[in-house]
Image (cartoon, rainbow, N blue to C red; front, side):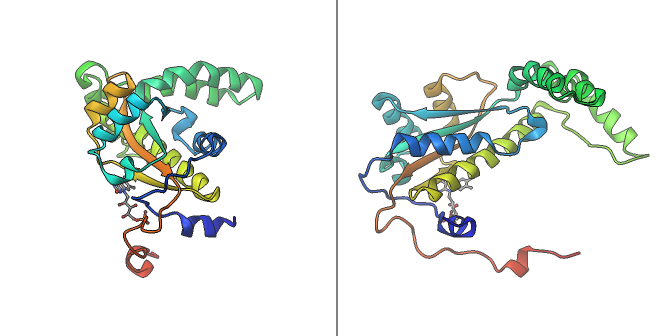
Length: 231
Ligand SMILES: Cc1cc2nc3c(=O)[nH]c(=O)nc-3n(C[C@H](O)[C@H](O)[C@H](O)COP(=O)(O)O)c2cc1C
């Protein structure tokens, strides 16, 4: 399918048929999700493909039993976890060796990434980070964060959201449909997944074949000239 056809075809589907989604379709889309751009390539995400009947039932309930979850053939949960920078850091350092990266890239992963991803207990480091950023920023352009643990979460959530879109488009390209959902009880979803409490549930994505009444109507968007600003 042509790229713009995929973009146009992807709709949020709230009612699916009972046609099963082949495992390869999901695997391929998950692979595409992991190829999304992400902050500093730290890949602070996890993808849960919820397969067991018991967990699926609990997840549907945690998604407020909405129809997009209830009628889905498959459910994927996209998680962002700021502590996961540690998982990739060693491998990234090794990678910098393999590609004979300039020393600045090594320093970036060795020194800067641990600093960026630390806020300290109860954000104790945040005021110091804020001061460095904002005093330095008086004299030259400086990233003004992330400072607090919430700021760090936001960094990770941005990357995971891009992975969610890659996933949804990859499913559309293979002739099936999705619905992104943030209508869920995050505490309950964390419990079902048994993830660390540092994790944030970014999106639950339902997958299936679109039923004839799958969407709520034709796509509605504000006119492009209202939201695109050429300055
Ligand atoms: C972050 C996010 C959360 C969403 N949560 C829900 C949800 O909980 N339930 C639902 O039915 N649709 C949900 N949607 C789908 C949106 O309602 C949908 O994308 C929007 O209405 C535009 O329609 P379209 O995707 O068909 O273009 C969500 C979409 C996003 C991006």
